[in-house]
Length: 255
Ligand SMILES: Nc1ncnc2c1ncn2[C@@H]1O[C@H](COP(=O)(O)OP(=O)(O)OP(=O)(O)O)[C@@H](O)[C@H]1O
Figure (cartoon, rainbow, N blue to C red):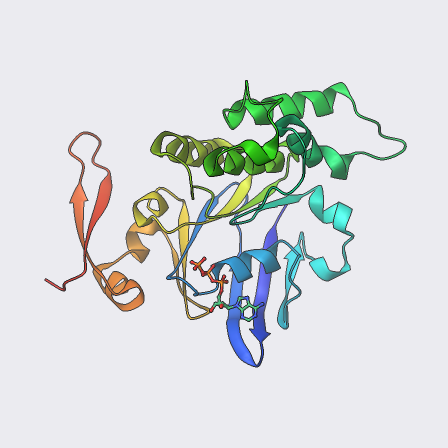
């Protein structure tokens, strides 16, 4: 399953919010999408998911224009976990995660043991065993976020798009969700604000005022100059002596 876009753009009230994005996801990769507030990350993810129609260019799923595909067909291949996803529905955690199976069900294809297994796996991976009967609206922000992630996992997509999935999560769950996404046999795009977490992705794309200003290996993309020009901060690159992993320590003064 290959997701790509060509010259993708979106404008609102004559203001160009995203423009000229060319991107082809590599099968199985985890692509980090970074950029300052308002740089267009959510807008780009929504277009890639087919829920926001582009003003220019096109999104292609396996070479087919997404605009021509049926919603159900898209949902069998791709899942999006949005930022600040609300929980208005008066349903249980389990029922919320079961909704992830909807694209696979029909009059001829009723609920089966495969659906049961997908829901169980998703609940386990999102660390929600024991929460199944809880009403969704009574959960904390972080617990609800994990339910939205579990619903997307239950969908068993080949492409997973996540908009700041670690928002609201405690540090253990931030690390476990990122580890899980990287370990899944799926292609994923994750919008992130934590640049140290972005360093763990296979590739990083950087948005600035709606344009892609860099895309490539994290170590090559996250340079001193880029941190200064795009994020307005100074970063010192340090090496963790325990595993030689690079980490960035940020400063607001240019020293
Ligand atoms: N429906 C809309 N109408 C007008 N402007 C919009 C609309 N949706 C988004 N925008 C504007 O587009 C810009 C990009 O928004 P977007 O949410 O894509 O950015 P982001 O990079 O995800 O930001 P953040 O890091 O703060 O979540 C913002 O300036 C926002 O105000």
